[in-house]
Image 1: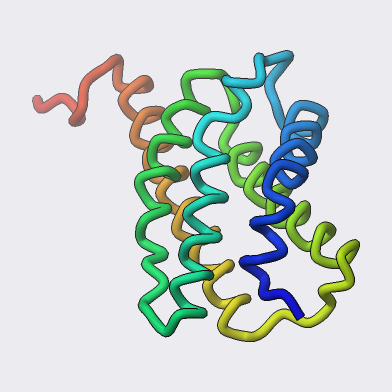
Image 2 (image 1 turned 120 degrees about the horizontal axis):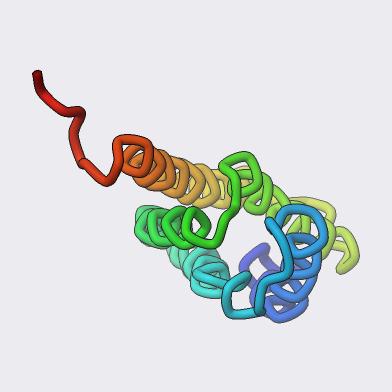
Length: 151
């Protein structure tokens, strides 16, 4: 049976297209171009697949590599008008697309370690996207200042 990484890798384009449709339909603040919607998600998918492959080879999965992508994604989403719940939900939509794809391919059993890596990648990217989004929002609320004014 193929590994989770193999199934995701062969369906990478399908996963991305399905995710794009869901985000435009359910989470985007309005019509956006494909590059605006795509942002760092194709690279995120590649890093998740790479982390899964590294684990298969007995190496450390390096889930930390998705963090900077989440950080950048949070910034881009802030500037394109997404609200914070939508930023989180779009990662959930991608996770759902992956699970749907696995099920369609008859891949009904995912090893615990594969699942752990997938969850770590998503959690790290979401956490970094939210953290950066909130920093930008705070800066905006403070009128562009990076710290609260002193008396």
